[in-house]
Image (cartoon, rainbow, N blue to C red; front, side):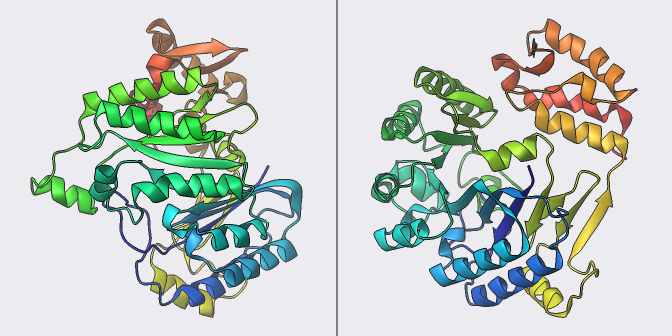
Length: 378
């Protein structure tokens, strides 16, 4: 179930919490599309001809792409790769970009799923995060997307911000549920290095996120979505039956994927590679690249230990968990030995021979997977 990811490294403005790779200078967007086309061509054999079951435009803000730019990218993708007739094709979008005309253009394209960065329905929250949209746009864009025929929608929310009290968080969650979208992602506000939020916290201009409030709000989220019929299928992701994100699920289950664009990552089951996270250097390198020249990315062949670690990190986060039978010796024995104490504490459970986090365990996921380092990283 291989997937294709395209990183569109442009945004209208910088959200205070975001540490993804992007630029607010849109002048070279056209050049970037040309470079993406070049990289697609050069990397055409990476997935060895396997049909794509998912295509994901991330960023950055992919909804900044024009209809013609998106069309050119799709033409190249379909020319180079077989694409499954039921492929999930997702485009991340900001609410302020989703005008009726934009939605119509997207409906006329192969895109069949939108991932909308709502974050909150509160003006105070959106200003705190430095989002480009307002609360009215947060609501209307979902209504308009549904009306335009996008049944497959997901939206992001952020909890734990100083401006988000429990009542506001409950309103955000219940509003999202009432809109009837089949998938929801929710993330705790995190202070990442080299972000505006980190600077503001360091200077005392804003308090750090309240961990107790974040835990309360996460617990409310789990209860509310469960009552509404959503499955909590990954730590931050909730879906109604049959609407789990195919692209992200393939990543969590260790399937191969190809990443195109600055900062994009790829994985072929044996090695992983990551592109340079610098727009100008990426553009310069792709204009001089030739087939077989790894000029714009670094590559690492994974050791058996690294493959084991990666499988634990991704698998334990999901409702499907991990099967120790998938691990060769001595990793199988290591897993069964180390998981025992977490079973006794009620943080991990067995399900059809697989191991996965319990509800309590989801609050302590980082702690549970920390013991993976016992073998060392390399």
